[in-house]
Image (cartoon, rainbow, N blue to C red; front, side, top):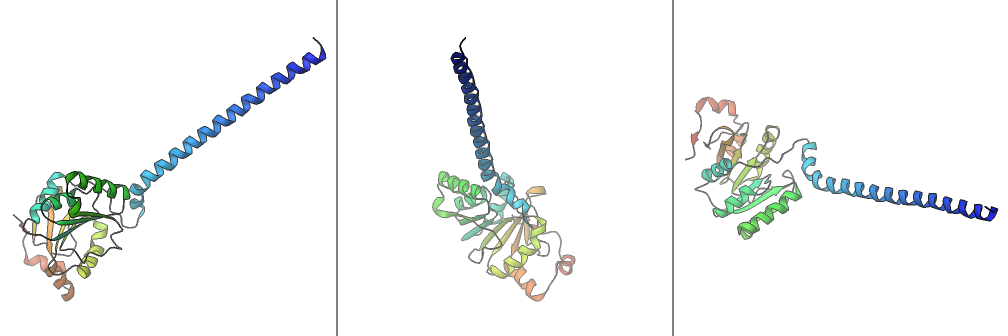
Length: 229
């Protein structure tokens, strides 16, 4: 083999190696892009669900059971007007209330759940009597509402007492699910166990707040609240 042929063959081998390196580098960039894009998409979906858990006082999304929804409606069966569900989740309370004649709204921090709630309301045919808002409950005003539903956690209930006492009209009713308010005296309850709901009259808790009456001084004067039925 001549020196020229040997040189040409060496050049061809080197070119093949360089091409393999370029191909591997290109595939590596594609793989990196795919993984990076997947992580961004995962964060976009998961962040609204994870973020509330990082807050000082969080209101996690735990769907209401059918019994809880029914107990809320039963507790408010003689009521009408505007209703707000604080931490409305997937909108099931708001939609059920709209079907029973309320002009119902939901406040929820998770945008995915708000958009899903709007879709469900449209599917149920109650989109004209419902509204869903992406909002922090501590930054929203509940003054326009005569009926309030809250699926809270113990860590937030004392702060929420003060907020609702200062904002709600005296004609309002508040329905607490899963956990009662720490100092308010319920006028009645509906259901039992984890499905229990407690009903509070704004005229009572606003008066007690102004008079500085504590739950401990009243609890001795009352028995277990009567059923709302």
